[in-house]
Length: 74
Image (cartoon, rainbow, N blue to C red; front, side, top):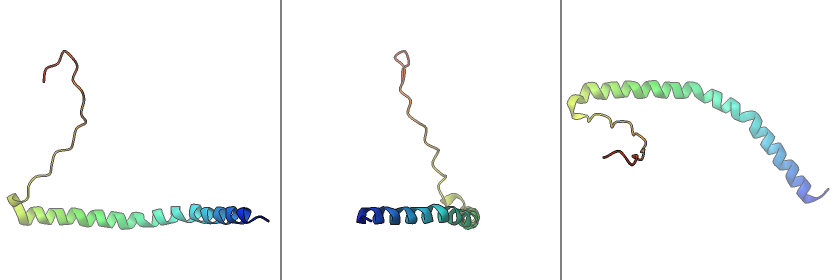
């Protein structure tokens, strides 16, 4: 057996293990992400209540740039 074949086989075993375990890691993180989002929303509500007008409003969502046609004036 050639060393390249052994390395290729080990690589495939490692990739197979990663392929098997990554979905479980992603699904186990979902509840943690939901808790983090809820805590962030609670913190934002508290900051709005405490800070009132001192907190600047959020920036508007960016809009994509669309080039003007020749017949349009800026």
